[in-house]
Image 1 (cartoon, rainbow, N blue to C red):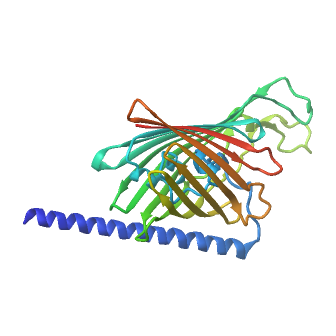
Image 2 (cartoon, rainbow, N blue to C red):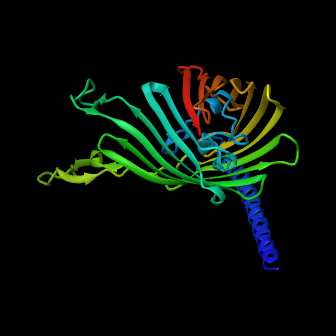
Length: 360
């Protein structure tokens, strides 16, 4: 009798939690829709360049990027830490992903993520993200050719993720993130969270995903570079014209993004696997857009991918993406994934993404 009551309570708890999660998805969708309508009502601008820590918008994993960044509903490898934290709950093995990119404007983007199972307690993950560049020469209005000093700029983020399966079809994930941006003698620190859900629909081969990324604090650069010598009354002679003062910088929000996605399994056999995916994205610093992608895998050895990023986004330089992958078993139980992606950035240089994945 006690076991029956306990099972009933567990089932009731899971049902309530699942209902709460679906309400969360509905609220996120309503908030994104309402936000979009308010923005369009006030002014028809994209708000590009009005957020801090924009390196958080750089996609992770050559596999997902080769599919046009349409990965919210798939999220079935360790790069799900970025695209949809709920996806790691359905992974059957531990995994690590390493991602390096020679990014735009001679910058370097690196990402390290890991996913580990804890049995019935769910799945945990961690990730480290960095955007770095070489030293640059300091220039001023008076010395446009350089002062002889060098400065550097870099961005870093460290994240911790927890995900769990509420049922055999439904999972939820949460990520907490610490962010730091540095430029010369100034820095800014912020905190953000991601929330994601993943659902295997009753329709065969069709999955659904939704995320809210980078919800958190505003960031403001502070440091020695804002210190100046100020004359409070330059029209008066004899006063102190070298009073130390601080030029305060403005605070900027994180690049908050809402995404929903669908993925469909076209083929699923030991020889051929093929999937299509579609994401709809609503950021707080740009217009809405769609991302479309597909993947074909032959004998679980080689994969080819293609996609299109930022469909219907006005004046976007993003478009076609292509990708390929190799799967290589190592030491019996270890599987190595080598992935490559090509991303067309129009007037900007094309980007080549490389990532290494290890499942064990």
